[in-house]
Amino acid sequence: MQEDILLKSRFQDLAGNAYEHNQYTFTGFLNAMEISTFMACTKDFSYVPYTLYGGYEGSERQVVRFGSEEMLGYEMPFPICCILIEPLIKKFADEFSHRDFLGALMNLGIERSMIGDIVVSNQSGYVFCLEKMAPFIMEQVDKVKHTHMKCSQVEELPKEIFHTFEELSVIVASERIDAVLSKVLKMSRSQSLNLFQEKKIFVNARLCENNNVIVKAGDIISVRGFGKLVYEGLRYQTKKDKLCVQLKRYL
Image: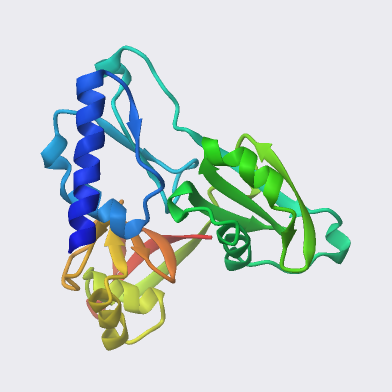
C-alpha cells in the first residue's frame, strides 16, 4: 500500500538523520498497525538503535526514538507530556469515555499523531501528547461534552490506575492463538477468525494474520476494540488433555 511505502520512507529518513547528524530523531505517536509496519522493516535501519515508548509502560500508541546514549554520547528523554483534563466541579460532571476526550481534542484540529493514549479514570482523562502540543491543549480544552473542564500537566499516571490487570485462567484445546482468544473474548472460533481477517490482532507489536500461531509465555496480544493481554503460559493439563492457561488483561 502507498501509505506503508510512505511510512517506511519516513522511518528510513529519521534513522538516516539520526546517524548522519548525530542527534536523536522522533516519530509522532504510532498506532498498532504503524508499529507493526515499523517492526517489520527494522532491518533496513539496523545501523541505528531505536526505542519505543508511549509515556508509560504498556501504552498502546508509541513514539519511536532513533539514537541512544551509547551512539550519541548523551541521553534525551522522549518529548511526551501527560495532561490531566478534569471537571471544574465533579459533582455536576458528565460520565466520560475515551471517545469523548478524543473528540474534544480532534475538534481542535489536532493531528492524531500528536496524541498518544488517553486513560479515563474517575471522570477525568489523562492525555499523553507530544510536548509541543501541551500548551495548546491546556489553553484550548475547556469543555468535554457539556462539562466545563480544567487542564494541568502531571508527571505520570496515578499509582491506583497504573499497571492494573485482571488475572484470567481459561481451559483451551491448544495454545493456538485463535483457541486462546475465542475463550478469553467469549466468542466462537469463526468469530475470532474474523478478527484476523480484519487485521485486528497484534502479537508483540506485530500484525498477526495467522490464526494457527502458538502463543508463548510473555507474548503481548493486542486486539483492536477488545484491549490487550499478556499470555503467561500453561498452568496445568486436565485429565481430558485440555490445557489450563493463564493470562493478564490490561484494565
